[in-house]
Structure formats: structure tokens, C-alpha cells
Length: 472
Image (cartoon, rainbow, N blue to C red; front, top):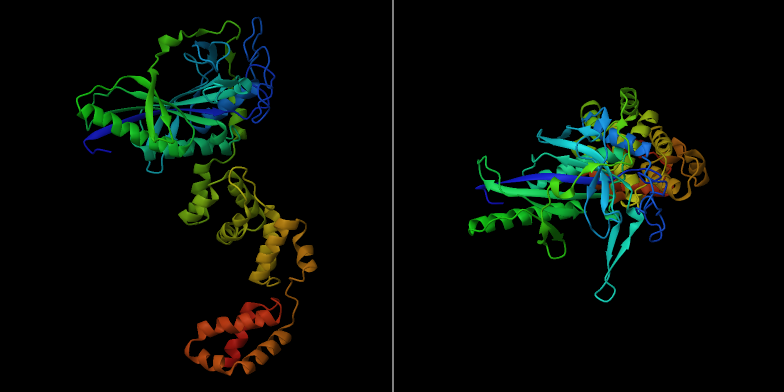
């Protein structure tokens, strides 16, 4: 970005909530169903059909607000947002304007900067347009219409693409960790609208903003912000004028194009929905939901860094997925060695995770800790401990029983290890002489030979102790 310009960014982030049914009807909230099968007279807006509010959607919206430090309104009101578009079968969307459920709050970045939230409100999602080809045209799937959606509207506090991506990551992690939303961007479960303007550096006069709609990956957000920033700067520098408009991002071409002039609230003709009463939110409910919240990523990060003294690198990996962090926390209840546990998870467990899209830890936390306890007690060599983890992942079962089944336990006597080492020393006179010059390197050779001779059952530390006895 040009150093003589500032960029001003506000984000509107939408996330679909983890409910079994839609927000105003009993249709399933389920991704991947056959086209237009999760629909009813209410969610497609047939005359006379009346909406009934999903209590769980309200509770999850309150939880989202609590995660972000919002104030929860005592009274929330639903309004109709009127606009005509093919994916909106009713020609209006039930949303919130004057009295949303959550007000204020925000997200703190790693730099310490605080990105303020204006609000979090609950609304219904629209359907999905499926663009085919020129002969078929565009088809519509209304399955998504009526799915409960929260919109998190930031203040224009973001000043770079990197800040925007970090802010989105933290929003997403809070929602996922609290079980509020899955935020699967590839399924449309989380989308982002970017409002952006540029101004001369240090100026208090804001430029005209544009809005880019429905960006569905962090990479797209990064690229779209960088592109739109330079487009506006170059336009202003050339003597042109930035128009207030809605633009669509084309990820393949790496550029945006104009869709329509930007709407204002007046254009949507908001008015209270006559079919829905105001919602009174009791303080007791808010306190109950607050008590249900798990430790969020920021709190876990502080514990991992300060109480467990883990390196930043380890912490970033452990917090990268809720499943990893939960696995680590549970394992600590059985085996209170944070650094050792983190090392084994990162090197010997995560390599068996098949895909990040359907992330699932490949074994149970207690099973891993049983292996580590046997390893600490010298009942398993390091190689056999790794082998046992692999067998637990592939076969399941009890760690001790599997270790016995595959003859992995170190049940060889010290005398047998000593005898094997003496034979190997006698058979390798050159290595014996080289040991005097380079003991570390040759020690590795002898340990490897003994482990091979004992089929991995010898204790490597015991072998090194005996080497020291015979060769020093």
C-alpha cells in the first residue's frame, strides 16, 4: 500500500449457527441435503405462514456476544429488511436494526490493538444461487433460506489486510471453541463483507467507501482488500472519484467489478415484523449461558504460555484446532507433563490426521498418555512407543494389551542386553577404536546394533551406560 495513504476498513461477518432447525420454522438446518428439500411454507414465504422464533438461535447469539464482550440487550426486536433478489423468496429478510441482541464488544489483536464491534444481530440466511451456463442460466436452492445467521458488524478500526485476517481468525476461533458455529467457509458457513475507503495519511476526512460482498475465504479477504485499496488510490491519484457502490470479488481474476450502487438503511424500508413479538432477555438466562462457555482461545493461550511455559510455536499448533486443544487439555488430566505431551502430539499424533476439513483426532487422549507412562517407566523404547501409537490409531483397543500382543514391552534382562553388547563390540573392532575419537557418533551406531539384536526391547539409556563401562 502507498505510505501516503491510510486505509479504513470495517467488516460485516456472517456465521451460520449450530442449531438443529431453522430460525423461524422446523425445517432441518443441515448442509448437503438434496436441493430444495429442507423447505416449508414458512421459510419460502407462502401467504399465511407464520414464523416461530427458535429459542436456541437466540441463546447462541447471546453466547456469541458474551465471547466478544458485548452488552446483551434486555429487549430485542425483529424487523423486515425489504429487497428483491432471486435467492430471497419472500422479498424480505427477517433481521434486526434498532434493537439487536448484542451491542458493543470487540476483539483484541496480538499487537494489543482492539477492534470494536458495533453489534451482533440475529437474522435468517437467504437461499443459494447456482450459476450454470448460458443455456441453463441460474438455478436456486432454497435449503439455506431461513438458516439462523448472526451478523457481526465491526467499527471501521481495521487498517490493513493482515489486521482483517487476524480479526477474522479470532472471531472464527471464538465461535468454534464455544460451539456456536462451525464456520466452514467452503460451505458458506462463514462469509465476510468488506467496507473499505482510503484517505490521505493523517487526514480526518474519510473517503467514499465501497463494499465487497460474500468473501468466503481468508485468502480472498486478504487479496480483495489489497486490490481494492490500490484501485481506490490509483483512481484518486488520477483525478477520478470513488463511487459508493457494491462490488463483487472475482477470485480467479484477482479483481473486483461493480454490481450496483450501495444501498443505505432507508433503501431497505425496515419496519418491525408484525408476526414476531419483541424478545425479552432475562438476566438469569444470560448468566446461565455465560457459565456454559468453555475456555476461549485467548484464555487458553495465556495458560499455555504462562502456566505451562510452552513455546509460541507449540501454542500456535495446539490452538490451531479446537479438537487439538481439547485433546491436549484432557491428556493433561492423566499425564501432567505439558511440554512432553505437546511434543508427542505434534510429532506422533497429528501426522495421522487425514484432513483439516473434517478434523478429528485419531485416538483418545487417555490412550496416548498410557503409552507415555509406559515409555517413562522404560517398559517401551522410543521406537516401540511410536509403533504402539500407530497400532492404537489403526486398530484401537487398550494400550497395554496391544503392547503385549505385538511383543513391544521391554521385558529383556539387563544381563541379556549386556551380553548382546559385548558380542557387538567384539565383532566391530574398528568401531571400538573410533569410539575413542568420536564417542557420540559411534555410540549411536552401537545402540542401534543392540536395539536390532534385541528386537527393540533394550533400553537405549541402559545400552549407553554399558558402553561407557566397557569402552571408556
